[in-house]
Length: 89
Image (tube, rainbow, N blue to C red; front, side, top):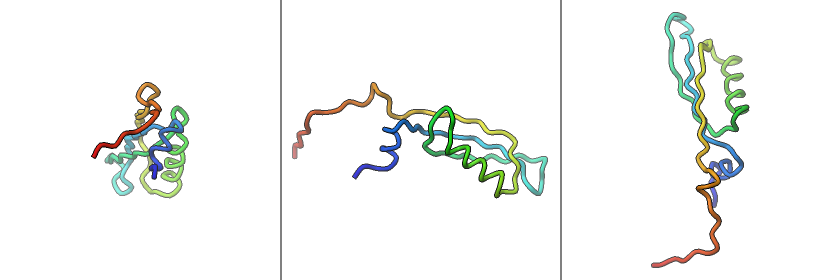
């Protein structure tokens, strides 16, 4: 059984981390940090954009800033197809 995350990586998804600073609803002068992490496609980041749209629509804390980092975990040089497998007990 192959994991969904591995399949997504093979489709070109990479691990995206967003550091979200938002204002506290009751204390707008204070900033709070939220870390979000998911597999997404760079450079358009459709999964992150959907999450931020949800945030703006449903949550009370207005966004201050979003910092995004992205890393493709599987690169072409790191993946090789094998011809066979030998199990030694």
